[in-house]
Amino acid sequence: MAGFFGMFDYSKAGPGVSKNAPQKKSFFLFWELYFRKFWKLCIANLLYALVSLPVVTNGLAEAGLTYVTRCYTRERHAFLPSDFWDAIKKNWKQALPAGLLRVVMLLLFGYDLFFFSQMKAEYSTFAVIGVAVTLCLFVVTTFMYYYMYFMIITFKLKFRQILKNCFALSSAAVWRNLLISLVLLLWYALLTVLFVAAGAFGWILGALLMLFVFPAFRSMLIQFVIFAPIRKWMIDPYYKEHPGEDIPLRQALGLEVEPEENAQPQEEAVFTDPESAAQQADEKVPRQYSQADMKRFYAQMSQDEDDQI
Image 1 (cartoon, rainbow, N blue to C red):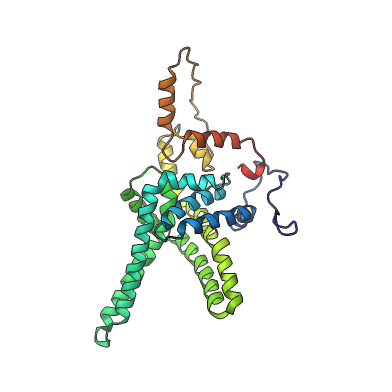
Image 2: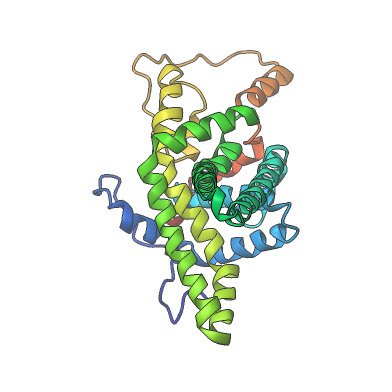
């Protein structure tokens, strides 16, 4: 059943949006995108929960969910569950250690807070400093992980470079990181109230929210907010120097590609080496995007407005 008594049904084709229509405010645009894909996000939540069950595989689940929510926030189509699993297959070598590192760091932070809280009164100053340092490191690493999985599924970078870029963005886009954290803190406060003070009904409602709503909402919020600084400091500077590269991939991220002013039409070759042409095509496509992905991208350009720009 699409929607609830006909409400929030975004599966039907709409009248379309003019290319020259005024840009919507970010707040309203986010909620429009979220409710448009709400039921698909519920499916993505179930896949996320399934992959995250062993805990140590949480990084894999984050990679799959990040790909889906990145597509939705960039107003691109995602095939569920195939794209979810494809994102895991293509990026597991970096997503898995990223998730394991996160689990280890959370355990260390928890141990440090417990250790300093148990110190005797004569060590109170040292304990306060220790707690402050631990909390600062926790905040920085939390900010870094807002960008981690987007970079893993989008860029061809070594894990060391990803960590370096995440650290730089954690300080360069502080207000955006704080905005994400504030919204998530409100979510955690709501869930805490449901689990602690609302009795059996609260437990049921909280469990349903954690299973069907929260993970995808969190991921979609992060992808929606962080794209602007990533584009400003990573994507635009690179393609300013390389304007003719990866045009289909940039379009897949919802980026407008201006035609080159002095571009000359290429003459059609009389003779073509099939093996050489295939090899060149493969070299132009980063490992995150296969030829099958490109075919699906072009096919999707002819579908209804709900799955287009």
